[in-house]
Image (spheres, rainbow, N blue to C red):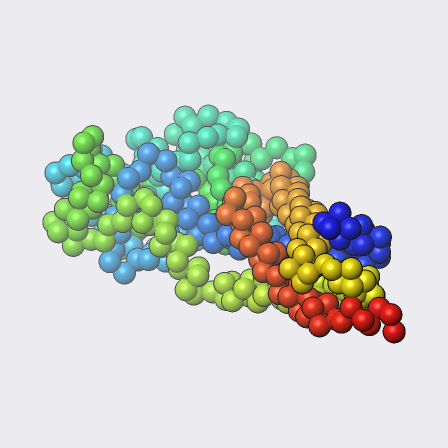
Length: 379
């Protein structure tokens, strides 16, 4: 009977393709939008994960994320270094600025100052240049995505001069980073240079980044620093989660993407439901004939389930593969989509949504078949 059901389905090519299109479009839209949503939210944590070898982030109690910062006095660094269990601690400055490119254009950037002696706070991987170049006067490193924004294709940023608050800055390296949520150009320099590039208030220290000694728990050390200094301390993963939660709580991104996903579900139900109902209606005589020769309602249900399963399998595969190819295609090109990927949980969730769509539409279409009398075939 399953073979007969599938032959009935594939025999009506137009409706078969329509059913596959409905499922494929719905799964593609849901998968693509959920993937972009997850990756955008992850961007709230990228500034934290761009800094390697750091266990703890120490900040003023009013600070919330790497972008929402209340500066601390420089004495906070010595206080943290004096806490038992802290292997090392380094200053970390982050502030916004406006630069003037050699072409005279203005661009908003984020200036990050790392420890002068150890360069702690600098991303681990260099795309171009050497980390030691940061010790040269007026040197800055630019992130790889920012370099693409500042300079046209084919132009080597190394050796190019920028103007930051009337001060000269020379690009001598490109670092590999994950873009932040705001996608601003990021300039890395030494802490002492950052203080001159970004003049401000008396308190300038954004964070103290620290590492717990071997054998010590980062969470225990964090509580100890708070108890002794009164400063807010978050572990690396906790501070990354703070960045993600800030985006969720203070932007309309979750609502907007949620609406799009809901529309994908509704469109899928509408297209598949309408097409499947038309298919059942056009084949009502065949179903009636099957019932007339003794096919039970239970077997009819299995036949419709087999038809829905084939449509769901093909449509789901086309939709998910299309969404993954879309995301990977843009991610491989760098730029804003750099680092985008499709978590395995999203195709699983999309598969569940596909089953729900097919179940709802299949049950609605079955009502007509189950009510059909075998005698209607002979009328």
